[in-house]
Structure formats: structure tokens, C-alpha cells
Length: 111
Image (tube, rainbow, N blue to C red; front, side, top):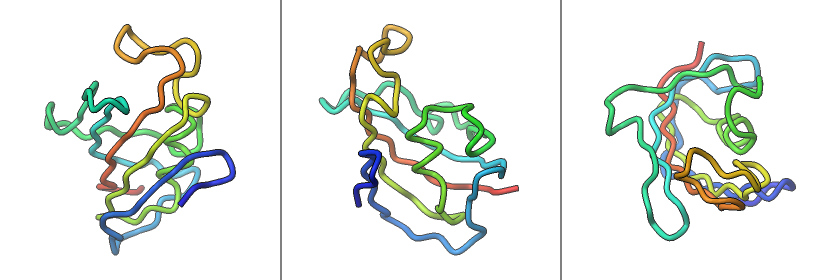
């Protein structure tokens, strides 16, 4: 599925719990890769879920859009164009400028 913003996503597991909506606090496990397959971050490697307020701009725009509508227990692959990611600036010397990012996200909790 490709959204009007250019975000692409595919669900590998639907989930059957609460649905994530803007304004919810959500907890996820994720792994992020560059399109060449280079892994740049993973909450699974740290064994520490990541929590944020959905739709509040606390994360890149591709996450706010891509996690919205997921159900707890669901897993989704997000392919995020650079304008919904870190753009021309890149990030932390790890993500190059104008990089398309690929994330596998598992929704653990909605509150």
C-alpha cells in the first residue's frame, strides 16, 4: 500500500488488540535499515521497547503516519521516503542525506 504522502507499508501480521490512533501513547519494537540493507538501529537489540505519543511529532513523520491504524500485536514494514524521514540533513552520521528508510515495527501497547 502506498499513501498519498509516498509512505509504503505492508502488514506481515494484523494484530487483534487496540488500534493506535493520533493522541495515543504507543510502545513498539522496531528495526531500521537503509535500502542497501545496512541496519542502523533496533530496539530489539537493546531489548527495550520504544514509546512515543502518536501524531505529536515526537518521531519522524513516516512513523506518525505509518503506525497510525496498527493494532496491538501487529507487525508492519514501513518504507519511508526521505521527506518523511530525516530529509537532506540525514541523522547522526548513520543515516545519509535524502535516505529512504525501511522499518519493521511491532505494536506492543496502546494507552
